[in-house]
Image (cartoon, rainbow over all chains, first blue to last red; front, side):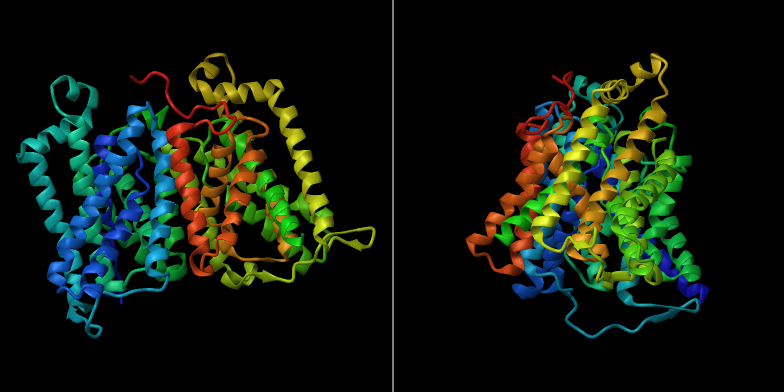
Length: 292
Length: 294
């Protein structure tokens, strides 16, 4: 039983880690909470639905298309809404309010176009779990645990070894100085939105393959992602991964004792604890904004 | 006619809710998306006192305010240790936890099925069951809260709140305990929005957790942003705009399945549009934006 809980926690944690990473990539260069990311997340799954169920394309074609469309949506939001707002002198608060509005719009668009019922991407029957270490895990759940590991590896490589990665780190650390040095911060931001939104779409598709999709799936994933990011310190890829896994484990071990309907409350209780005692997370450094 | 009265009552209830958030977000600058949670507290306290203890509305209303105030105090003391975006997050967390409790503590709150049959208020034996009577009650209270807000904002206390919104460090340099001002504003805001929750409970005579979710909190925030945060009449204008205008959609003949979604899309778009053209709202003074950017 405990083994199953631990694995469930790791699987959930992997999802959170992936969602958190997708959010972190956007947060680092822009430094505001892009709430609409939750809607982009959900749209990733629904794009895939369009391609695989409505257009009857095979899953291995629909998935990358869904991811690309999600990336496109994220880029569209940046170019169409956030960038013009920044040009008009918007503070982080204005962008946050705009992103709240955008979330409302896009989540309701899903409800309007696809309805509120739970939809599925799976064509076949529910898979039986493979016994591992005394727990049962389905094949798709194994992919869910693998995907963040691979994604983290790819992102870390990009950040460390490519020119884009270096420019990204510079822009995240100090946008003004990066501009002075000739780095096109706007282009970095656009790339961040593309990468982060695409990753969110991937995470959403994986989640859907495990537990199906609803229009509101993005909000829960977004908040879990933010919690994981804050636990991990809001600065590093490694911290975010750690945060996600810890959150998943804490949540599932917690529901063992107090029932699964309190899942959300546990996650947000953890967030509150971290905000009050260690807002800069486990691997973070104290930040002025948070400490003043 | 009944329909128009219903709209007017809703506008009144949202005016009270928006005015209370205005105190917290518009005047003090604390953007909070937990306000619907406190409205829910007010609603559930009033409903439970009416249903289980047979208390009159006139008694359960102050109790609702008191409970909301205490909860706000307990919640805000830790929450106000962080600022700006992180404070918004903290209020989001509070909201979700509150919704979670409302949905899951079934013994106490009736869970997702809600609480039906809430007793309506009565004065000297006359039950306020018609729309006209409810309208009078709601708008009397709305007028009262507008007046109280006016007095508060034009007092030294109110001036400190506005100063905190503009430059917190400066206020602290002048020797004011910024933290306690913020807590006070937050607690007062929560107590007032509990009133709107209570009114909603006795008007519709049925409540469930879905009326007090984070979407509702964002909606109340949108109301003051559209109307004008930081002014007295902003919440009234915003409430009128965001409650009445979507009702016009009814006459467009949308299928009822998507009508609710279309309204939400519209108010989301309105929120985004306001950020572009007039972040301070139709008549507001809080700019929400920095004047120092190039």
